[in-house]
Length: 109
Image (cartoon, rainbow, N blue to C red; front, side, top):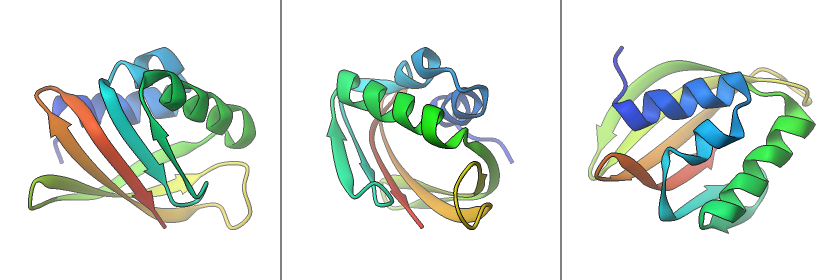
């Protein structure tokens, strides 16, 4: 399975726990809605803080299981493991792209 460049970079950065590389995947005005955190993060600095918190708390590792186009979004299904109860769990990542950057990401269990 071949992910588009920003999505491949996003998951690579997530697994490497590289916040700078992860943030570089996003458009300056991007939003992330993390259903598990029950919050929306708007803009690069908020996304940076969100990613750093996840790295410190959970040490996530993500294995992509599938990908499909869903309208103007790309749905990536992944197995996520880390330092949390019930690990590993399956999550759905809904990406909206703006050029070669992620403009919106919604993460749902």
